[in-house]
Length: 423
Image 1 (cartoon, one colour):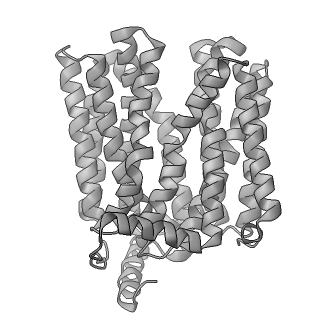
Image 2 (cartoon, helix red, strand yellow):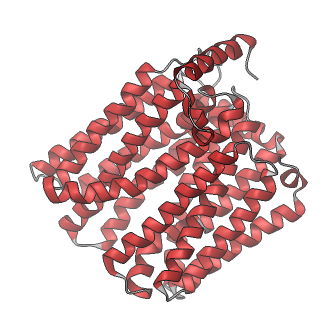
Image 3 (cartoon, one colour):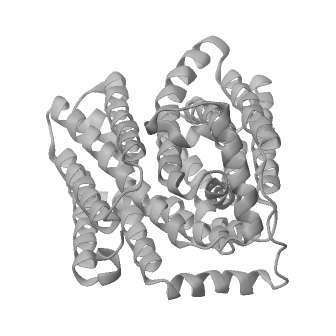
């Protein structure tokens, strides 16, 4: 729980933010000047990150012409979330979250400039790309818990759902804009230009972090990192509603979200749609996600969240199953839209519910467990899907995994009273 002094400080910050300008109900969290700075800085930075992702994949193909190395580099950038995010949460509860974000964002900026320099002078190898991707993943895994835990300190409690939805919207808008701009930038400046522009984009979030007014945090407790980590798991175990949400996140991340990795396969092999078709499928998914985030933002405080996230999750998995067996491009686009819409609705409900249930003192560790489940398990799910694809058709493998996740959701809802009572 917050102290009276913290509540007063936060209330003063929020009041000053509201006096600056008025925003429509859909974007009411942006009336707070601190959250507005944080949101816009991250939006610009995320566009740069997506531009770098496009160039990184292209660079790997230029260096190796190998799908295997694409997978290796992707795995190198993702696996740190499974290894380091929990420790990032412990550190987030021990230090000033803004300062930790300044450090991690600066590291990622320097790595982007390093990539740009190596690519520009044409002295880069695929091993160096993989190594930098791994280091970038480590920085991102340390960044994620603090990022998640910082949002509730910047807005009113009743605006938290709207703030989380707006964050989801900006991420998915950057997912649409970044690759598009990245393609044009590569054509003009080459891959080195994309890496350089991504490095420049970090200046936006660094500027925002240095200019927001952030309330003082409690001093860190003097205990070992392992004791802090055990304390986070013990706290989670005592809260049955948070615990069931984490298990549902595990099911979705391991068996559902890996589907996104295989969309290029369906575009090329099953739909014969080519590169442009892949772009339209990804755009449909991204547009659905943006619209889903906007729906959550407009709705404000979501009632009956246990029912909503279960229903959204089952529809998400059903859309994946339908996509796996679709041979019609228009139908696949519609299913990609539904997948994006329901997926972001489900994820927003997870995030909002866990944020509301967690105390400020434990928020960093709780969000690190959530981030590990959400970001660290999809690479393992993709490996599982890939192994299954060696024995059965890829569509069957992904549909089977999505069906299993859907049954887990329905089973948990049927037998978990804490989930049904989540409001």
